[in-house]
Length: 324
Image (cartoon, rainbow, N blue to C red; front, side, top):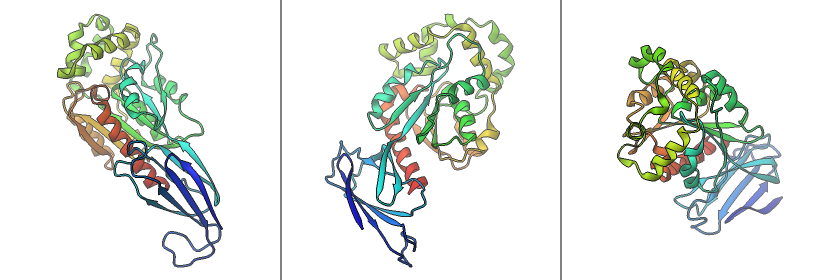
């Protein structure tokens, strides 16, 4: 029995029900197995960003054959097998955990660069409360999708939160991206200054301080304005609490428990998080993939298109490895 159906922009699928075929490499010798053939109708579907599909694990076994695959193809959807002759297309979700500002507003350039290939959940933290990592993890957990496949992305301050969430292997999680971040205090020599954080005039720091550490030579009036707007929304109490949290954090044990693929995007010109932080992540979780981008700490804002391409590629490879 064969069924042909449309499964997304520019693709047709051919689903073939098979009988017992012992010796087949991809289709196990039992009734209920099937083959899925996805045929690209052209080589330039949505500018090469074709909606590639991944198979979720089900009782019925499948093999997949892609034909006329665009060279720049990237994943955007998970193709979920419901029965041997019925399929469901599901958009992959990216859960975005913000930096120290906690607003999530600074993800705008990155989300724009990713386009319509994903759903997004942008987490924001309470702007006035003095909460540490444990409390903020609880806030982030409430935003995780309940019935969707998703990737967690932790930027800067939120790296430890992403790791803690991923270590608990929540349902639907397929991968984790860490960006310009750390899993333990990135500046251990500053830890004794934690007590002084209660008195630091963090809201009065001049703009050039933020620009130097976050943007470097890539600073533009637009990016500077975005940073000022984000920082203006957070209270001094909340800012100081997050700073103390960074100086005492260590989620190395949790990192060892992460079971999904991990991507670390490192900023070559990062003046805030040193290279030792990504090296340490790799030493704790040896299968972590590290990619370096020539950008400052705010690489998702400065090099948003390049970062988006890296994340799209990671999503495709992750889906292929876990669900094909």
